[in-house]
Amino acid sequence: MFVRICSAVIFASLLSGAAQAQVQFQPPQTSFRSLFKMPDPRGEFVRLCAPHMVGRWAHPETVCACLHDYAAATVEDADLREALLRGISETGVPTIETAWVPASKQSLIGPTFTKIAKPTLQCMFEPATNQ
Image (cartoon, rainbow, N blue to C red; front, side, top):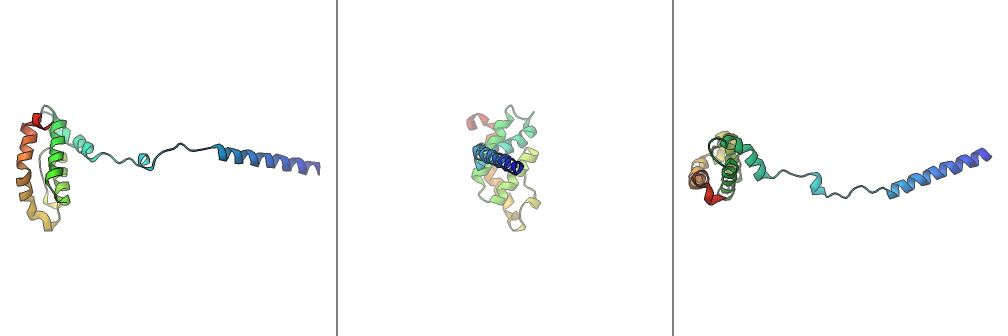
């Protein structure tokens, strides 16, 4: 009988200690956003684009950032904008492959280049005014 009582007391003290430990433990406070930080799209674009600009321009990051900003502001259609940004980040020059754009929008590729021609030249040849 004495052994049962001692066993019950030990078991109860272990359970109460575990319960106290569970109550006292609080995980660090982190926000949901910090757990799943999405990369900055502009920063990622500049990171991919800049190596293609090295040797061509004195400040490749500035040129790439300028190209991104003009493309994002000038090209309203999301499919064309994404294709244009992909082309610049992969080649260092404004490029749109027809396979990157839905067939229904492929006729808009030429007008898109016309729309971005002047801003592109300004980014490449007048970077001091775009910093």
